[in-house]
Image (cartoon, rainbow, N blue to C red; front, side, top):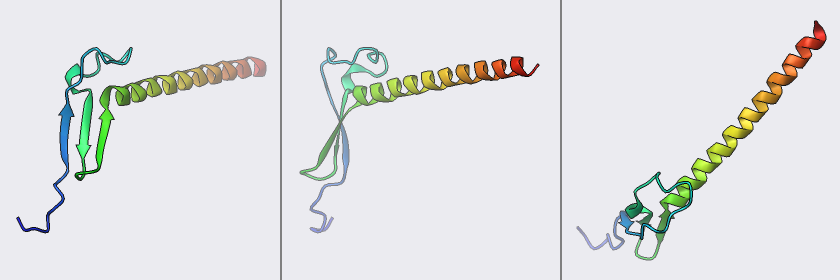
Length: 88
């Protein structure tokens, strides 16, 4: 390789974390060794994702969204039933 490539290519490295560090409710979603993933773009830019936290936010966000959808569906079905009873 020529000297133009001074910046190393992006590498994905898993950082071993202690198994004690887990978020409640999401401890079974991922193996405890790969809780941190560092994404190295260049020598001075490193993104570190806490995978369990990310999964937790996604998981709980989907749960909350689903509960709202479910609630809205129940309200809508109750309202349509009420409307049906009024019409007859």
